[in-house]
Image (cartoon, rainbow, N blue to C red; front, side):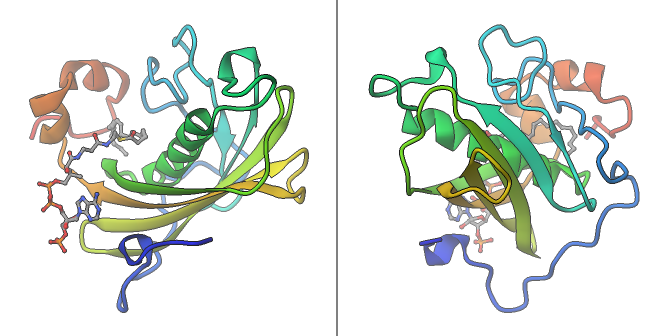
Amino acid sequence: MTRSSLTTPPQGAVLPAAHPGAPPPGAPLASHYSRCFGCGTDHPTGLHLTARTPDGATVEAEFTVGEAHQGAPRLAHGGVLATAMDEVIGMSVYLLHKPYVTGRLETDYLLPVPVGTTLHLRAWCNGIAGRKAYLEAEGRIGAPDGPVAVRAAALFIEVGMEHFAKYGDLAAIAAEHQDYEVNP
Ligand SMILES: CCCCCCCC/C=C\CCCCCCCC(=O)SCCNC(=O)CCNC(=O)[C@H](O)C(C)(C)COP(=O)(O)OP(=O)(O)OC[C@H]1O[C@@H](n2cnc3c(N)ncnc32)[C@H](O)[C@@H]1OP(=O)(O)O
């Protein structure tokens, strides 16, 4: 991955321990919001990514490129692929049971991805330093050990729930997350 210093963990960054409340290996991860474009089950035109964690820290998911995802004829749009990477990375940091948002997302496109291709996505954390989480993801064509088509590195920033109250709709999150303290 060609990554900038902004998405490279600094000295002293620590790998997060698997959260005790993480789902067991192989269990599906719940969507963080039913109308999320990346993972929401109720989104009419979203990517509908479903993911699982094999180890409480890494996230795996599949994304099949469809007609709606084209940039050039019969080829995936790079922005859609970046969305899939953002989402799967977001799912991996979501395992820490703290709210984070994307601060920076860097993407390398290594191979074109034709419509009909299933990308096998994997995301993991390379370290945490204060509010900053340094994460990485890859998308492989056709199989978990297939050729790498996309790589991404990201910096996610931990926020308080007040972030969603100030800028978004905290009530909508609260309605789906009874297990989180949503009253800042
Ligand atoms: C898990 C359980 C939770 C419970 C349930 C909750 C449901 C939650 C629902 C959903 C969450 C998951 C959603 C996943 C979906 C995919 C992810 C997305 O699409 S997220 C949307 C796109 N991203 C944004 O909209 C961010 C917009 N930006 C901001 O709001 C601010 O800029 C923010 C919060 C990122 C930082 O603002 P500041 O005021 O809090 O903090 P400052 O001081 O500016 O930054 C802190 C440190 O980070 C660095 N930093 C910030 N942005 C950076 C950047 N772009 N590049 C490099 N460094 C950056 C700064 O330089 C600073 O570093 P120094 O502490 O000084 O060392």
